[in-house]
Length: 227
Ligand code: ADP
Ligand code: ADP
Image (tube, rainbow, N blue to C red; front, top):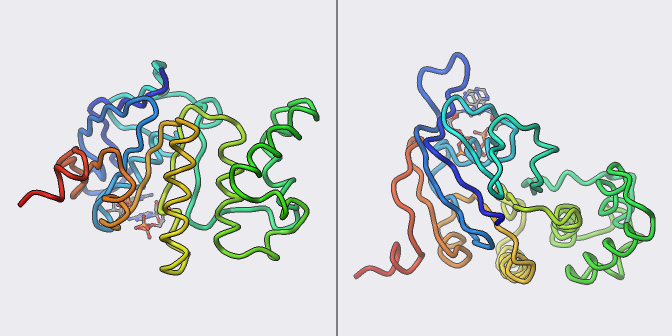
């Protein structure tokens, strides 16, 4: 039971005139790939950041894997987040970058090595494990960021515009890789984008936000293929 549930979730930033996200309810099933889509400023990042625990929930509740995490610290939520700027450590190798969170959590060395090698294999990074990020292409860096996220075997995978720094061709390739990887892992995924094509091609379901309000939640074919 690793779904993510939002119940009447609101975020009103201190001092802001109105709420950035208002009364959003969403039931994301275990293993589902849900895309949050909408124009810039509609509240996508804020919603994702509340799920991650990086933004305070003003009202409502969030459940991950059946556990109410509304007031739980980000590190204790059993989630992993991938940002648009990758946020890799430049002085560390790919292996050290992927291993980092396991090291911090004091996993035994052999377990770390096994997990890192499994992640590298899944992401086609085995031959780059001893390189530094600056020696990699944008797409490879993006995969290292994903490796760092999956290595903890989180209950949910949160991605905020992970393709926005890639050129058009690489975006299509990486889109496919992300879809395949998350389905292979069976991990519940919440994916933020302003790009309708990404929403349509990647989502099991798509949640459309506008001005902080949830407009529609449905499968891509129901949302976009209507005559
Ligand atoms: P996005 O790509 O999600 O539209 P923005 O450029 O709107 O990102 O925001 C970038 C950063 O600035 C985020 O960390 C966001 O929380 C912060 N931010 C955006 N709007 C405001 C605001 N009105 N007041 C304070 N911080 C803001
Ligand atoms: P999106 O990700 O869809 O671009 P955001 O969630 O970043 O939208 O922002 C939603 C709204 O909240 C915007 O009006 C933005 O300016 C505002 N906002 C974002 N971060 C902050 C912040 N830290 N403080 C005040 N307002 C913010």
